[in-house]
Picture 1: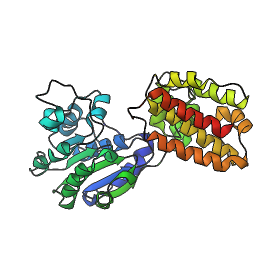
Picture 2: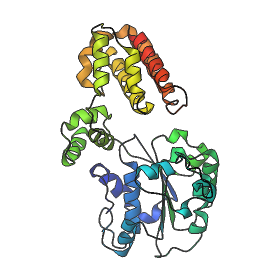
Picture 3: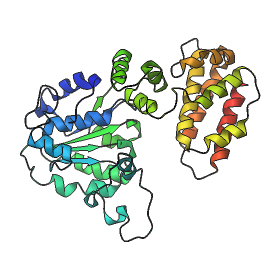
Picture 4: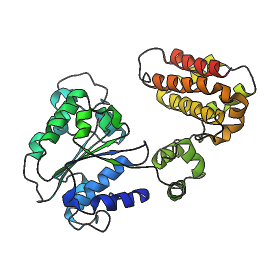
Length: 348
């Protein structure tokens, strides 16, 4: 049964109070790890339920049974091939064209991280039919920022002439990356971070120890904190703690060795850690509390002061720019060493 997360209940009540006044498209946005996808799916479940409860679906009617089985005729879930693969699902042939699936080719293509135009076009014949149950027809599309320009334009065509009884739910961590014309056709619906106490209580219910530390590492986003806690790591990666300790104690740092170790995995995770370290350093330099790794505040304080605010701000911006290169085809080790060297030089 698709249910709203505890911190989403009030938003759900507000949104579903009068379903007849819903727009044809909602852009659900907010920080990553707050459950925008889960919220969109729960909204879909509520609208397709034939015995809707005060908040959400009943989980027992024919509509709920079909939805749980992935066979509801009035529901479509649209996401990139790579996202579906990470969810443990292979996209059906009718979700992608022959060119998108690679049929007829002996070369196995890497799953796409982008929403393709074929996926949007495949919806057209579906939403021009009458609904099977005489009620709503719902499309949940995520992450919306992975729409290519041509895919976004294809979706825009549908939103400009919205089919009857059809709701498009777009979930996005980065709505600023969407075409302005597409955003203008949606009603924006923001999902904020839950209160820390509520998020910590939910994490404890999921079996997470030290929920406050995981929440801090995830910037207050409970689903991101849960994923980190289940990753088998510590709230602050060991390499990051050791790196900051060596810098604070003015020890010799083996940057090539550290870079070699980081290069064994994808660049995204360690770049994410460097981003958060730089933000924490900026906060401490400004006299504020560390946001992500409060356990490192002693090292932060030994390294920064107000005179370094400008250089730390520049470091954060620079690392953010490097994050866009996380999947580049160049040497992973040289890229890691380059980023670590810039971080080191800023603090020494």
